[in-house]
Image (cartoon, rainbow, N blue to C red):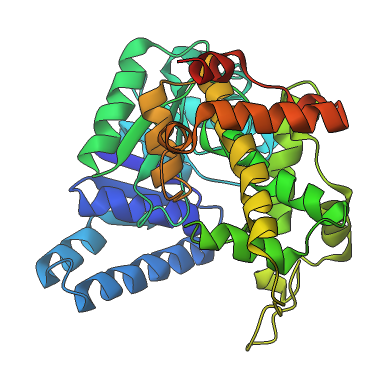
Length: 378
């Protein structure tokens, strides 16, 4: 199978590596040969690390590199069976690319987008044959992250969705299917992990350090503020904003002015040396002692919101409960599936907690999903 990858940045190069290691021929395309060579060098370094850790053999290393054709000539994609776009997250840029691509690739070539938040259906609308188009969302870094979200557009043929599921599985990934809804599964469900944490800081209830400490003490690999700094506020804020607008300004997804101001200042997180924390090479903040009661309150506010969002995602038919549990454990590395965690903590207690917050705030962000309320009665 010949795979075209458009965009040789970290995401595109990572997808190219996966395909090449799985035995597929890869055409790695970018606007300049310099950009492609930079992407290819990143792939080589990644394969070198795998070789040093004895995760691949010397032969696999050599053959993977030989399967990748670096190019700045889009005409090379004439033989592709599947093309995956991994360029800048801009609707107009992507649609222009797809319109041009459709004139080059074979009629039976599947065209996929790696978008994390844009409407797959709207992206497909620029094509003469939109039924061949779908979302294939990898997580960064794609060579390491096991999850792939497959997102059929309203126009996507069933066979295309099935083909992408089989391809992702053949590449060693766990694939889940998501309805074309803002944020898909992971970026929709994960919003409260950030937004409720920011809300507590804005209210003066807890500090950044206290919230991060509370959540890591309950098993999360990174606290919400450390994670936002790691992702970058240019990415994290924009995804929140996109999901909020995509859901017609639903208050549950409203972005934060606190994070907006970091973005305005150019404090994008770890990559710029400053975000919620200041990174000086030795420390990212100081933590003073705080009570277990406060730590528990922080955890319960965030976990209640996450479980409610998970229930809403299944209730609205975005995905199955099984796929949601896979998505949150493999896509954002939560310690447990959110339905499993909710059952363990007690769905009734989560509903009670959310109802109390709604009574206090009278904001729609705390409204309880009907499915969660039903599960609480079981």
